[in-house]
Image 1 (tube, rainbow, N blue to C red):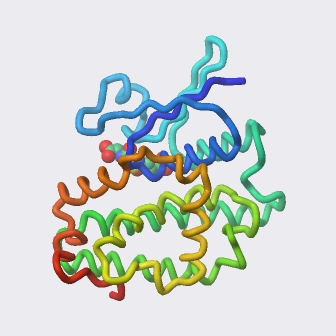
Image 2: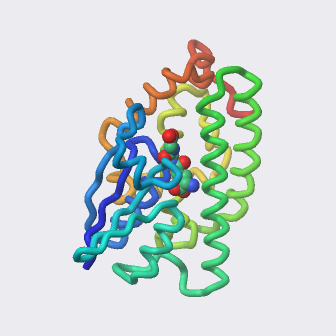
Amino acid sequence: MSKFTLISFKLCPYVQRVAISLREKGIPFELVYVDFSDKPDWFKAISPLGKVPLLRVDEGSDTAVLFESSVILEYLEDIGEGRPMHPADPVETALQRGWMEFGSSLLADIWSLEIATGAAAYESAVVSLNRKLDRLENALGAGPFFNGTEFTFVDAVFAPAFRYFDVFDAFMERSILARFARVTAWRQALAQRPSVAEAVVPEYADLLHDFLRGKGAWLIHAANGRGVSAHA
Ligand SMILES: N[C@@H](CCC(=O)N[C@@H](CS)C(=O)NCC(=O)O)C(=O)O
């Protein structure tokens, strides 16, 4: 079996989806964290886009460095180690790949929310998020996971997105997710999954809080004393 090394950044949701999938498949791996405030030369040399995650695959004297999280997930499925994380039916798999892309687009809105330093940018991110969450709510079935009882790649993609709200919610009168009942139930089921819980370092919430403070996030500053809107 190949040896796998996941090159990571502690706050990265794209890294988490790979770590969750490796754990779900029972594939052993090592973690190497990169300091983004001072990216090392070895990292710059091997990351074509200067981004994490990278999955280094060593087999004998051969080494490959895979980049782009969704490509890495498909690779993990292709090698057939552990249990499948795509549905058996090709149409279901194609739909699942679409929702994985949707998950990345939700992460883009979450990023806009994080880095908003004023009310207008913040409210615009909330509007966009709410629109997507409404779509997601209507796409969900009886659960507990996206495809029912089996935990698949879509779950691995959305779990890190929902994790942000564990920190955001502390600054809000009411969670942005609260009015979406099926999304909320899904969020709770994902949070209880060991692969999800173990995909971040114990100090994750503190690091995210520091990041938001460092960015001067409206999310934090506007919340002082009154809470920020979840309803824009
Ligand atoms: N499309 C990429 C996105 C990965 C990504 O945006 N990674 C961020 C961290 S979460 C990154 O490495 N950014 C580089 C930087 O901030 O300098 C993927 O799916 O792997």
